[in-house]
Image (tube, rainbow, N blue to C red):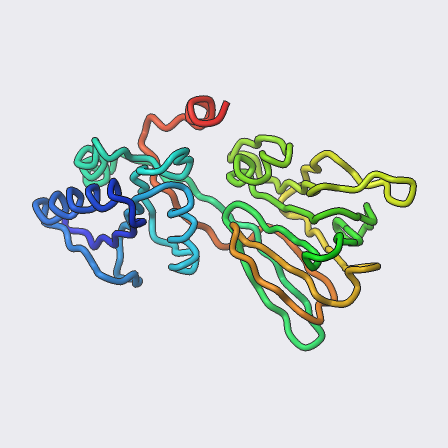
Length: 267
């Protein structure tokens, strides 16, 4: 049965070559390739690495269409296929020999004096103060204040994001089968004046984290990064972070093994 495909790639020579081969295969098998993403697309093919995958998701505004990744990058946690087995990947899709990994992003609501802004991240949300000062935040979980924090910032990561910036900060690796969020401090201070937590906190995904600027960060200017994309917000009263109800759908082959991929890519 003919399907509508949308192909997204980075500009590396390996990705360009893989796209050329992919387009030839799709046309030969009777599929259509659309130039732009829309609700007419049945399958998205992402050619590149994890950064390309994240760029695709943000560009298409967290699409509900299944995504198959072809890894021409380095780690490729999100990518399932390889450039030397593109036809096999398309055959598996045509024959229904795949499973869907459903991933819920992390969502931030930024409450300012006049507006409420909403942003999402597949891997994480990073909350910082202005770059010239340490960040000072009151951190609450489910309306219970747990910390008056001082340091570079607070990261809230999803399970799939636990292998990204969270891991470089010393956070835990978390199975994507667990329905949790992970709160990890970034360069926390530890002095007589500030006693900040240094290890990650795992919390149920249904819980909400509230971050409020205090001290030097009480001027209302807060910088947030979503999967590395940075935005500055002014006149901020507080930020609430929780699991989103939105889902993205990643195509995995039937022999997909998270722990095998983790050990071969990272450990």
